Length: 257
Image 1: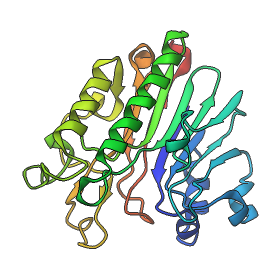
Image 2: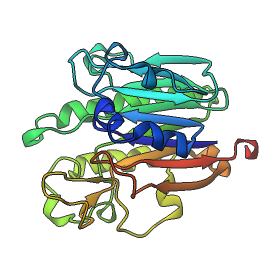
Image 3: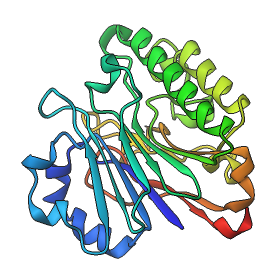
């Protein structure tokens, strides 16, 4: 099973840049999108009805903001929007799909905001998410979590760590939560295979950072440790354009668990 996750920074914008052609070429089993910035009623049939896939959407109450979507070849057993708290769920950040072999979280985690004002909101979201994920694990379920986490975990995960220690996305408290999350029994799949730096998933548009590879790795695919025998590959598709983020993904051999 090949799973790809991508913050598209606007599904309608990326559609104009060849998104559907890219989607057809990649042919993933599951495609998770973040920051779609649209409700289904704002989209055309080409996006809503991709041949061979079922699709589910979660939009923010505020138009043109946030939003996530998932395309799956296999029909999910169930789909849930949100984490169960209206304060967070009004922003359309979460889809939870029961795929049978595992529970899939597709999440657009909050940014800390200008002046780091939303960092407390972000950390509270992190905590509620972890509680939800752990509840599934206590039921004996495997868990796969993908999305834009909006935090670079270690200095190796961004090009200029020293210059960003006081900026959201690399604050000590944000990084400490990621550490605690991993210590709770989850795997950063890309780091499982690739310990070295220089691999990023987001670059600032305004400064032309992508051409110089001055980036951040803030998009992740996590799995629970019990699912590790099924993990055969983790990747970053750094050459894919169309957004300020690039796609990331994993390959799972589910018959291995």
